[in-house]
Each structure stands twice: as structure tokens, then as C-alpha cells.
Length: 130
Image (cartoon, rainbow, N blue to C red; front, top):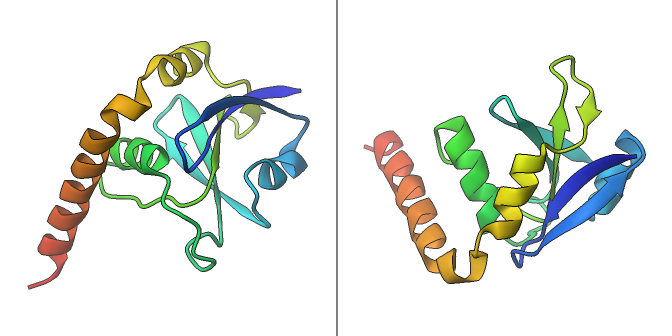
């Protein structure tokens, strides 16, 4: 079993165990999933059709993806975060990632997170629209 962290759209951080790749989509309530690389330390598994099915925005996942990618990324639906071994294999999420996500006071930071994400999205759109 592989240890992962699920971040829900209502900002709950939960421990999850998956046996293999077939457990990823059901654990986030999706039919299909895609992978968003979170730099060199982890992968975020997201609902591949979430935007098409009007899933709610996941602010925490959007901020993690935006900071990791360096450009705005809007993530919807629940997500799963797991580690990777550099060869493409899914492994346990790093302990420091678990500690950080579980110690972060999401509720008290919610408005700052929302504002920062909106600022990044507006800035990106302003650069594309002339």
C-alpha cells in the first residue's frame, strides 16, 4: 500500500492508502485522473474531466500547483498527493509534505490563499489579453 494525502474541495487534509494506480481515480471521486508534478518532491493526481463536469475549485490544490508550476493553475475537485521515485513510480508521500499540510491552518489562511490565487490568475490573464 502507498500512503497519500487527499485534499478535499472544502480544505480537509486526509490520509489515504492506495494499492496501485487503479485506486487513484475512485479516491478523488473521478472517472479519469491526470498528474500535476509538484516540483521534484511529489505528484498531485487531479480529476481529468473536473472542469467539464463543474467540480468546485480546490483552492489549496490550485495554490500548490500554481506555486510549483510558476504560472496559474486552476485545480477542481478533490486531489491526491503522493510521492514519486524519479522513475515514474508512485511511492509514499514524503513525511515533510504530510507534516506541512497537516500543520497548516487552512481555515485561518483561506482568504489570503483565495486573494493570492485570484491575483495570480488576473495577472496571467492581463498578460494574454491586449
